[in-house]
Image (cartoon, rainbow over all chains, first blue to last red):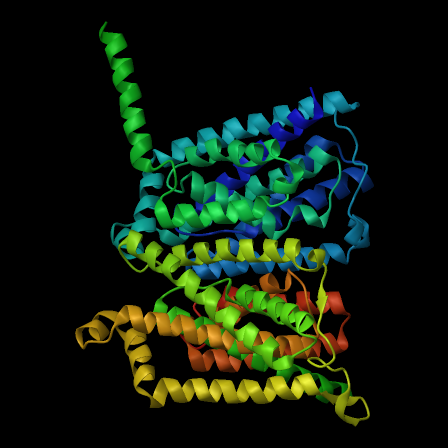
Length: 296
Length: 294
């Protein structure tokens, strides 16, 4: 497989997963940027386990997921039902603290980062295929779980919280518990993503986990459509892929383009390109075709 | 003890800038009903404009300062229709979507600064604006020109702002909108025009802060806005969103805390400690110490 295609497929999958990790807590109105800090925490920890303690990659990946979940759970105990801006600022603070701690830890390479992570499959080709298999397996699993969530009672409860917290509480929704569950799940996904992100490049550097990453995930979710999971799935490859077709001089302005797009969509089409109404109509259209085929 | 006093002086001047930033931020929050997260990024952009004009005019301070203030007002006024449009589309006041919009503006500003000015490298202001020469030195304690200016201008600007808010007609209009927008409309206060005044006023404050930051720090980098933005929002949340008096206390406290930590612990760790303290307060009291005014 050509290297550019591998990077495109792998990074697109990570972007979709990260956008979903933001999408889930945003179902109750939380912009949970701690996910980016969790990527760094889990990624660096897993890399340290593999490089220093020679733990097999599979176990390190599981540890990454677990660590992400634990951090997410502990934080959610405090901000499970906090206002959006408080959740945002906790996320940003975590990113700063994580970056400062990693910068000062020699065990994980400090400002230099970690390089020369082992090939998982023994050689570079096998390594790429294994990474892609894990990433897309994870994408299917997480996508399935989010789809089930969106169509469940919990999903409807989350929609109620998003629209009106007081109303949702009066209908018996435990806002704090729901917020905690979604935050913990999103942090678990982010933890695993962090490990895989580093193993795609076989290195870790603090420049991977910057505010640009927050901006990219935010653009994917808000431009694609924050009310459904499908917007992120469709927009992530477009947003990452299309700039690659342009000359390098334009590619370097990618963040400005993302920012402009984000502002334009918020002003002109606040729900993003794929709205919930559109998805429902598409679903009913498809189920209509299925019914027609059955009766024929 | 001398280190402690020196750091308290540093902290007071830094804190006065935080106070100004939080005041501008809270003004927009209360009157225009927006969370302008990237307000500090607008300030850093103005710092770059000051730098640019100083270079182009052979360090003409008056032109530099004017350019900083004007650029800050212009950016604020340009972004005003965007915020208004987002609120209108939503059909209600939705401060969260304004925060996302503001983050988009911040992304653009930061990236433009890292591409178009000084090849993305940090900029240094000339000695005419930020002199390292102390005006007073007693042992380890030295008071720099920038520190004195930022403290004095900070006190004057905040006092003027509070006077305007509590002793003038436009100030009453600002407070009325902050208290009850529908009631304010009923008694004939023009919401849109008053909202625009708040953008312009916070722009003026932004320009002043840009000059003070340039004097105090002596340099700027594209990432400075993000870091300050984060601190300003944190101060605002810790104080209680929209709480002007709370912002004053917490802004000064954060400045002093940061300076004291920097005085005793190595540079990179000191930031982390200040952030941890901020994080603990936000986690324990996510709705603020002094109560939100929203």
